[in-house]
Image (cartoon, rainbow over the protein chains, first blue to last red):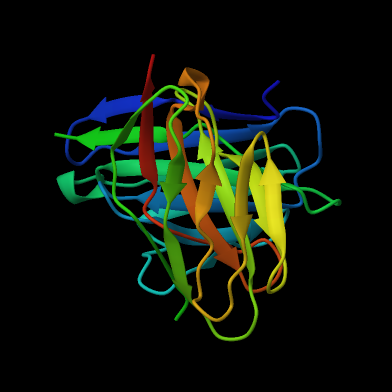
Length: 114
Length: 111
């Protein structure tokens, strides 16, 4: 069964609003979490890496004030897209790893900003 | 920087057909190579991996061989089933769990 729960699976919002995406590990402690973004017909691009209790490390070109990542506990990480605009429309996916370094992925969130 | 290129889909096949999805990569050093599969409505799952040159990863009838000389990691399956319909991602990792992905290839197997 699924070990990672990502919600929502699909969200449509108006330009200027903020959207929060949750990623939960269901039966293990996720020490490191990764957030990816995929544009249509493009690769999954790593946005940021976060370790529990510390600030996220963002990849070059990713706006940290735009994409707020909170890794508040060993089972939950959130990605908030602030003041979303149509160019933020994309597929976002989280992945988690625990002490055994096995990597698990969420099912992804399709964000559409009107 | 590192990059992964895989064939664009969709790839449409009949059941029991032979499947090949090409994947080539650019990286410094000797990364580990992976194939991930995403079934409809689910997260990515590791399908197989290879950690050094000439290694062959295999799982569920799928195989891929780490070819350093051609910087490739093509995915093959001799006889596909309808249940193999999914999106397949090739990826590399120089170290740890930081992955660089290809764009994904959608495979549709018709009965």
